[in-house]
Length: 339
Image (cartoon, rainbow, N blue to C red; front, side, top):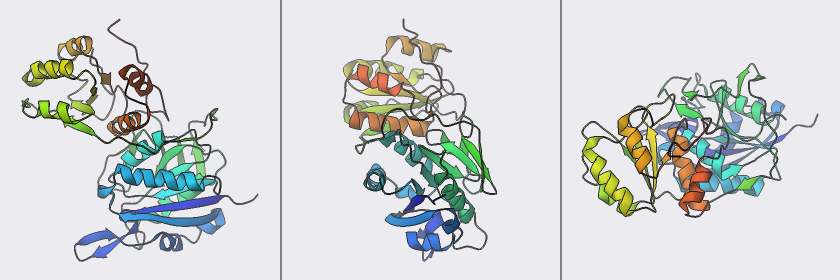
């Protein structure tokens, strides 16, 4: 069997970091990364490209666009793609790519490490080799994170530990697969895509994440509605708007009907359900907004950016798109409780 051609797209992160005067910084280039895993040549025919070399704290939508452009330009040349990325914003990038590259029959694997690849004790080499194994497997497709032996759908990943090797988990959704000693154990069979691959390069990042705290003040809320195209409210528990800001929230909702409002939750697991308590049920019935349900916050943010950048601005259309399931991002069956 002929070996697959896999392109490594390096963006920096801890995996490519070395000590500098002020702490760890990404300094190792793409070709050098490959030199640390010589076994990769037994798996596939690898090639490498260096897009940027940044700490993932500095990852922005413009970098997502660079990654998508690199995949698009090389899509016919390669059988799969491995993206080396920092862990801190990896879940955001995985979610963003899930919307920016849809229906890809070729796997797009994002990975990184908690320790630099040039260290004697590191998770970088295992994560990279696992990613190449997965990308070179004929059953792999779409966008996913491979990390710590886990394969996680791009819209379901969340970094849950800041230092440990098992840094990522799949939120309210099974792992797609596990990788152990080069063996890929698939838990969810891939459903072949019926539509051709679609690339989207525009992301509207004029959105604001409002995290509720006890006793939150209404100061500044009017400014947010004036300045931003979308506001994601990270509420408590299953969701609701506290009394301290409810009056002005109702007022601004009516004043700016064109604004996209999304109610999400600060709780990692089990999602939102604003019909449960009065603080959520009342506003759910009287205001027009979107609800995150079981979507991760990273997926919500990336999906709103993608929607506003590519799907026009009609709110009825945006609502339909938001509740369309893409790469396992939404499992909850959405019904309109106002009916």
